[in-house]
Image 1: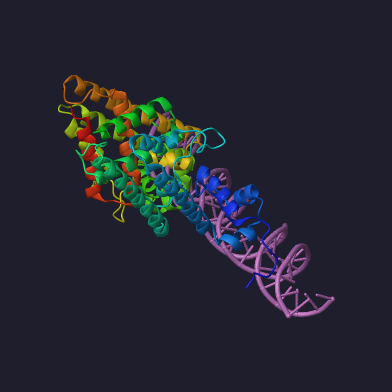
Image 2: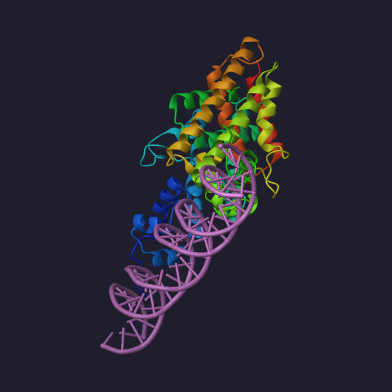
Length: 199
Length: 199
DNA sequence: CAACTTCTTGACAGGTCGTTCAAGAAGTCA
DNA sequence: TGACTTCTTGAACGACCTGTCAAGAAGTTG
């Protein structure tokens, strides 16, 4: 049963991806529907018809953000030795190629930004970010467990605790780098953390 | 030269402190002037007359927050051995007594929240949070330098890098704990970090 | 072709927001 | 007391915001 009626004049996935960029750099509250209409070249009614209200639109963007990130994370950590890959993941927020806004400053992690702005008073947002954090620690814990077994990573601490620490590190780094992107200091801190994990 | 005219009917400092609480738990955008009027029992005109506009009011609250925190930090780290005191500082965001909103969830660090919501598009906010981060790392660096000299903390890494790492850790912890306050996991991660610092 | 369905457009409604202001209240000072 | 200064009060303003909707446009189907 093919869809009948007038076809959409824009690509839904691509529009969501571009909305994600906007939400990411400006935040939820500071991004108005009018901003989206202007940036996406899609009229209000079409946005509402396609994505529902603003909150749903935003949460869909956050979900998309996390899905992409999780795929990247899983793929990157499926390797040995682990520590170089881990270092790569941690330095992600301070690299300028992928995570930069037009003013030349990284805009952090969208999940973290959502945590600051919508959690805990928005329960659906809380659920999304909580699940994202859990998945991060699960994926990293698995990788660390393998690396401990291989003798690459110290077993002075449990992999769960190490993974939780790395979650805090990457979130803190993402946040602080919005204000104060000192790449040298950031890389030195990351290297310190990586070295502390070495067996 | 004594001030003439009708005296203020409320305490300025105390009102700012209570506004800080509100801004802290709800964020800048989600706290309306009406919310402040209701919570502080001070009419709009008086707030504007005393504190200027909303943004100035908020930034003053952030400055107050940081001043209090910095005094606490400096005093707490002026001790030996350092690591127990450092552990105390790091666990601060997950303790419920001082940093909890009415729904029983910590609301993070106001400086970090400001970073997520107002940085980088508000230059004055950016300046405040950047300075706060710098002061944190300066204070912690000094303490670590002393503790390295005393043989308590490892000198495998430079104290600057260790301090930067601790900044990321405490900011990440504050943020993530808003969504997912697993005290056991948080404490295990903190202990892992502290042990990695031990000589 | 005509009937039908869906998408697009942009004006509009209704609410909330930050901010201002004029009039009255409550002090100080001479 | 009267002049002066500052604070308080709450109504009002204009801007902006999210969300809706009716009319037209553009496809599909038979």
